[in-house]
Length: 79
Image: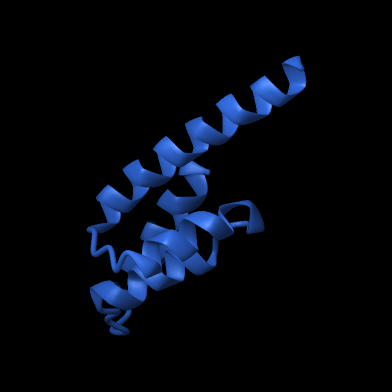
């Protein structure tokens, strides 16, 4: 997941270099929309709570959520 998000950051930066500047809000939306369905709850919470974070902060939030997913999966598998 981290690699995917970093690739998205790179694409956004490359578009800026090509003259298509993307504002912060659109860049966050592009990253969120590129996430798999398993992150749907996170995306909903992000929008409902009107979070406004920088791209690196978003990456850190996604890392945290992914760790939670791993813990939940391992707990379900152990049952």
